[in-house]
Each structure stands twice: as C-alpha cells, then as structure tokens.
Amino acid sequence: MAVPRFEGQPLIDAYGNNQFRLAAQEFDGSMLLTPKGVYPWAVTRIEDADIDGLAAVIAAADTFDFLIVGTGLTMARWPKQITAHLEALRIIPDFMDTGAAARTYNVLRAEDRRVAAALIAVL
Image 1 (cartoon, helix red, strand yellow):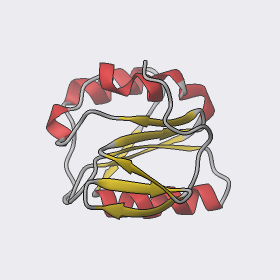
Image 2: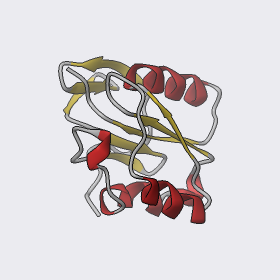
Image 3: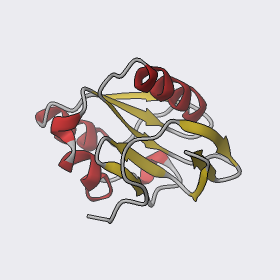
Image 4: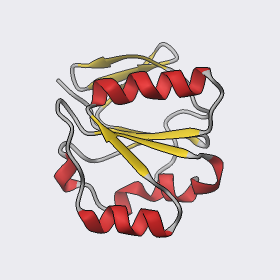
C-alpha cells in the first residue's frame, strides 16, 4: 500500500486541471481520501480501477461508513467484480461524477460523517 500524501482528511478546496487542492496544497492526479490519509490513485478512467489500487480504502474500511466514488466528467461504474469484492467487506460504493463526488464528500465531512472517497481527476 502507498504511503499517504497527506495525513488526516482535509476538505476539497478545488479540483480540475488534473489536480485536487486540499488544505491549500495541490495534488496531481486521481486520489483516495480516507480518515487515515490521502493517497495517490493510479486511475484515469473508472474502467481501469482494480482491487489492488483500492488497498488504502480497504485498509481503512473500519473508519468510514460511506465510500463516494468520483468517476470523472460523467457518472459511470467500475467493473462489477470490484463492487462485489467491496460489498463482501461491507463497503458500499456510491458512484457520481467527480464534481458531485467532491461536493458530497465536503458536505459529509462538514457534518462530521465518516466518509472516504475515490476520485478520478478531471481536466
């Protein structure tokens, strides 16, 4: 599993141009946000997601109740076997485009809800 780029779970200040800005810091590419930290996610299209790439989410499963999945510019779903694997671990993904996912994540964090996110960066 990757080392976190950022400890803790900041709000998303901005996204776009293949970046996310969290706590006034810019991060390139897609990312995983969990209560244990912010991790790079080597995915540019939701169809390319795999279980191994979600290791940080799986490792943090006991620290969140919601997994928001930002799928890029449009809403899509990753391969069904990923959902089946996660559901067996009691992780239920909620898919939406990345913009909606970023907003939903921030609302849930502002409400002090236990949330994680897998976000595909958009241009």
